[in-house]
Image 1: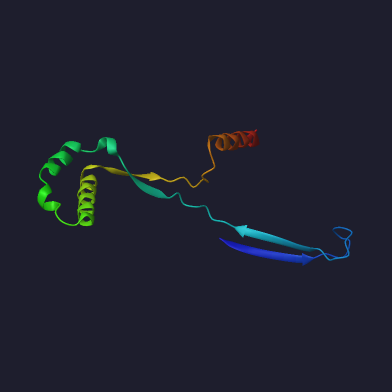
Image 2: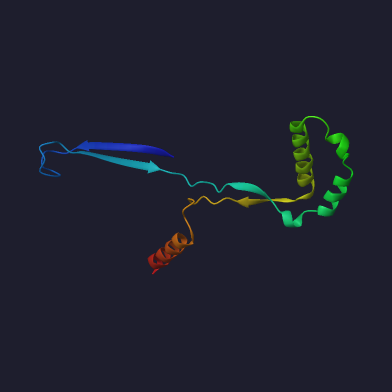
Length: 119
């Protein structure tokens, strides 16, 4: 992508009846097409919760959580996160490159416009 700028100065009264010179600026902007980004999401309805429950039953809760509350909270979160990573599958999905305000109404109008241009 890049920007190319061209400018010119018009003679008196060429554009309007002003006593000033008009400056014309032309910008040419070359923009590449953005690649559609991907993100990873969890498929929670396909998780193996029986195995997760079995692994949780092996945790020595009293020895894991003794002492500082901040350490206990961090350790609990770590246990749960590890089990989610192990038993809940993920998949990669495409992220929209459209602006957040672009909804169904905008898309329908774009499709109608495209169809009319083809006729």
